[in-house]
Amino acid sequence: MRKSQAGSRRATVPLSAVLAATALTAVGCSGSATDTDSSPKTPTANVSTPPVHAGVDYQLGGAYTPPKGVSVVSRDHTASPAPGVYNICYVNAFQAQPDAEADWDADLLLRDRSGKVVMDEDWGEAMLDIGTPAKRTRIAQKVDGWIDACADKGFDAVEPDNYDSYTRAPHGLLTAADAEAFQTLLARHAHARHLAIAQKNTLELANDRKRVGLDFAVVEECGQYDECGSYVDAFGDHVIVVEYTEKGMKKACAGWGDRISIVRRDLDVTPAGHEGYVRETCDRY
Image 1: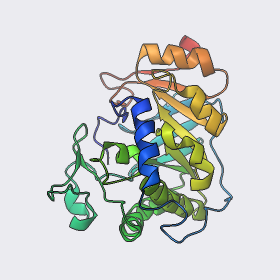
Image 2: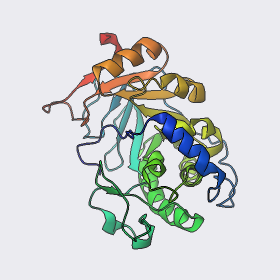
Image 3: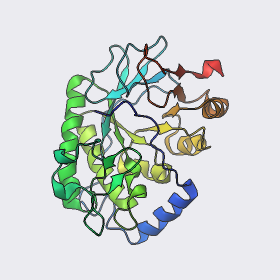
Image 4: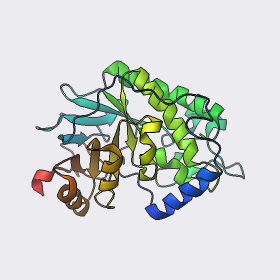
């Protein structure tokens, strides 16, 4: 389960640099979402996507009764879904949880050329090695177990986090194609369990979302970084936005508040009733 600091996962590298790196690695990548795993494109599935332009709450820091007007809630996979609303199940799919490296086989942790485990230093999480079809399959088996638990509990969708982990890996260790290939495996399994699946952030891969099999987007701070329009271009109105600053919230609401689901939360996504809790909607702006 994610610790209380479950806020923004955004890389500090400018998007233009990430896009350039993605283009370069795609040329010499270790495969694509459809060829390295010898598997067909994720089929259209009988799944229900979240209602658009809806009241949404982001409860990764702890579950609580959804506020009035909320019809979409995202919670950690260890929690239970909220009754009477559309429920999204969060899983940390591309990285190990903090201090949880021992939960994974040692060879499934990404290592640099000296053999040291590669960490997401901002979150203290070891990156998973999705660089080969065999390792992707083994990692997916574990994540699929969490997805199964989401389905069994009655969640409607799954939100795999850290799709963009390849952008934080040392040069050449992981590629965009590796990320898409792994995400394709997760999408196929989610759809088999009649769950919709979200793309989390990772604007540079949004145009491939249909090929990968992604149904909607959960986006942090697209208002803050002037990216909401690009996500709408890729996903239509099936975009859920979480902002963490007043500035970002104002921009998201001004540009897209009449079309997509937008909420402001505190960076630690603190449960209601606890110090630091912030939840605002576009009605305030």
